[in-house]
Image 1 (cartoon, rainbow, N blue to C red):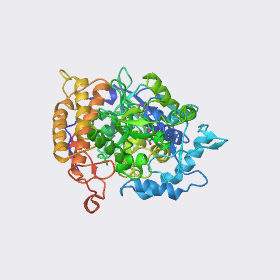
Image 2 (tube, protein in one colour):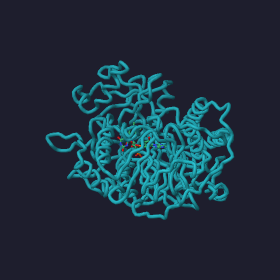
Image 3 (cartoon, protein in one colour):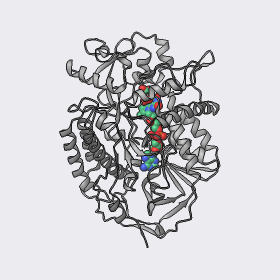
Image 4 (cartoon, rainbow, N blue to C red):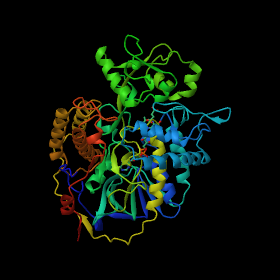
Length: 542
Ligand code: FAD
Ligand code: SIN
């Protein structure tokens, strides 16, 4: 579907002849697990630049808690992991991708171990945790700080490679295209606008949780890759599918820290204000039902009991086991003076994982030649309409590796520097970026959140489109403004896709269409900018 958001092709005017231009073979945007795995792979044969907006370690990957799912236990099978992934995806998984990620993922995890990733072990044997939707314990972990261990491991490997250069505190603003082909990125290095030209570009910019008032995601998750790809004409897919995680600590003034599903896997129990364990009322799997079911059940129980939260009870767990398995959670409780030994912890759901993204094939190729995407910013069809717990780190490794390998095989002639873009933009006078960002996050949480309905989605789309009509027409000169422009763009598209999907499926729940409708909706919704508009605004060769 063509979808028009009132957006210029480029967020900034530029003329390559007047910019400092860096040239490389493969340019990777982002430094999470998907980016690092792609960079390591591509660097086997080509020069790689990794460009990231904060320091290398700042990304969602670094905060992953529960772990990484892989069918490598001797009693586990690839078929069982594949079946669990397909069942959780509510009919929208691409089975070919699922088979590839699960099968190659098992090797990718063994490779991580060989590179030094230290997963928890008992008596020398790897330990596997149980999480929602898995038919057996399958999740490898390092306490509840697995992401930190994996991010450190891959950073260590990548930093040793002479073909890989890191550019930190460097914000990618837009993709440079010539004809329809992606040839590089416009970026801001903290002082000035610059350009990086490459034979292939891999987007690994992570998710867009910052669209919502309540989110587990770090501040970098602002959907920049999706915004850039949309403006460059790439197809986006499945944007209506945003996964909400049931358990984040809910305390006024505290950021919404995730409490891992592994805590419920270890028999942590959700209770209401009267102490009642309510999840069995809603689903036979109780506390380990799929996340969408748990999140909605929590909302209903909150309504029933007139409370703003429910409570996660771990008071029955042996102290030593909690300290060993969940050191991050224990530290979090200590920071806020919470006595987890005696009192259940206040929790609420929050936006967690963006299933939708830039549409890619099995090699990470997008619909724009020369442009690849991997990790959370990509939509490969692996997760379908709901993501199985701890499957995303696995996808980052496999599709990162595949994208890196494929991108390294792209060779192009130098494109010259006679390229310029001249969007007609106003100065950003009178726009309060923080105010608008907060309004957007509240609106998205209220109207495009866990429970949706047609009229409210349409109203949200109209409100955000109106904001876009002025905020997309100005030239900001710093990342805060560009992030807002990306967030508004993706907010409009997400509301529009959610309004279009008139059924409930996986993480997308419509109170006006509560049933799944396979006859009409067993398909993906793709969306892209109008090609004629993009062509009219292509950079000129001057
Ligand atoms: P990220 O790791 O988010 O990296 C994105 C990178 O892109 C960052 O370096 C960012 O700075 C950079 N970037 C973004 N925009 C720009 C720009 N404009 N210019 C330059 N750089 C940019 N999944 C699991 O499988 N298991 C778990 O246990 C688990 N726990 C989680 C816990 C939390 C709290 C969160 C938030 C997520 C969790 N997830 C988990 C999901 C998983 O962590 C993410 O899906 C995954 O790490 C995404 O990796 P990525 O490489 O795609 O993106
Ligand atoms: C968690 O630890 O609950 C998060 C796991 C995930 O998002 O896959």
